[in-house]
Image (cartoon, rainbow, N blue to C red; front, side, top):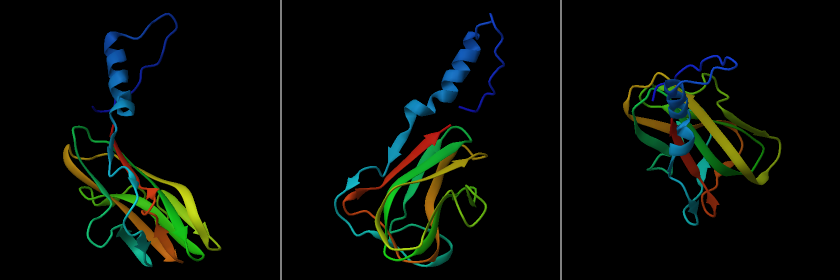
Length: 170
């Protein structure tokens, strides 16, 4: 459903059925988000993130961490929840990449999440990376979770920690 600008409320003038229906449709993403690659992974090798001074898709060597979704609107919100082990001081950033737009959600080398730590620390729990895309073409769209690592040792936990990817059409 395309975005609808809200009306200005006027005292004594309740919203019309059309305005109410449009507002409910705009908020429906709260109810219809689809969890993808969701779950507690009790096995598998952690994702070892090597030095990458260009944006690189998180992969186990074969399968990328990505959301593939057929959408009807032009807006999509991507979310990733994960944990990290930092085996040394590190500087790593995460962001979402739209394959169809050939763009990341942020246009810099910091991304939407940056972890900059001066010492080893394990595990770093509760990392969240979000990216909002507009101007998409309705139909099949692919979104890759990417990282940009300047230094340090970083593992994205997968053995015994959940990695959850969520996609919401707005």
